[in-house]
Image: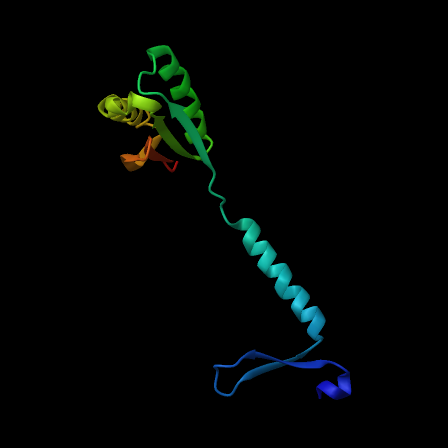
Length: 134
């Protein structure tokens, strides 16, 4: 039948018993499949991660300023990566960095939840916050 119509015989499902085949134009079939894949891919949610950097002795005004930015990032649906960067010998203030990140988490509780608690990785103490679903 496929040869009479000058089309191709395409196996749709191999695992079915008997195998499912269709008489179609193969190039058009491939094009339709690519189009469906592209449409599915465009509907997927893309995760955006925004970063905010603090120092171990960040002042109150700077903290408030950065907190407002963090709040805006969470409201627009982005993940937030807040970290305290320790330069040189400031690594001795690990506890201050952790207090700072926990304070940030507490103040952003309304807009997001903590995905990863503050953890020291090298010279950085990192905390991840995900936005709350509306």
